[in-house]
Image 1: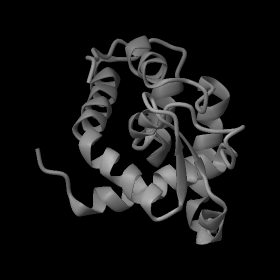
Image 2: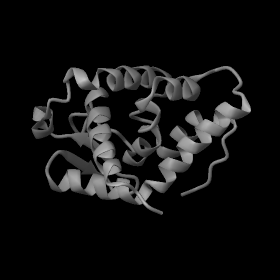
Image 3: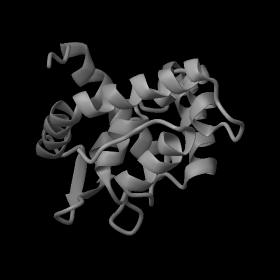
Image 4: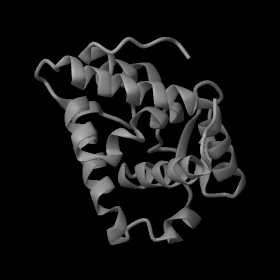
Length: 159
């Protein structure tokens, strides 16, 4: 499968934004299963996708299809996402903790990246909304999949 170069930038800044917005700045407050970020990256990119993922009402077939597409995209990005995480850790922007699954937190150097810039206001707002619904930073990858996809009728598989 082909993953566009833009996806690497997208996954990198999304990872940094999520860690920052969820206050994951130390080992005491870390994102417990970093793999879960790949599943929420696209959801926080658009208000309409977020509304689908956090809806408590039954979804139409078209809406389920849209969530299924977002899930498939996350699965296709798994290997590139792992490379992005490794690159962020190598550059000292995040610290990885544990072995399987790995947790992560944002290191102090990354706070200088202007993540609070107005250009990210939309994503920050959507992360905040998602945080209230899903307890995002402490949910493992399986729980994220269950809450955002399986709960709406999207078929998932162990990747």
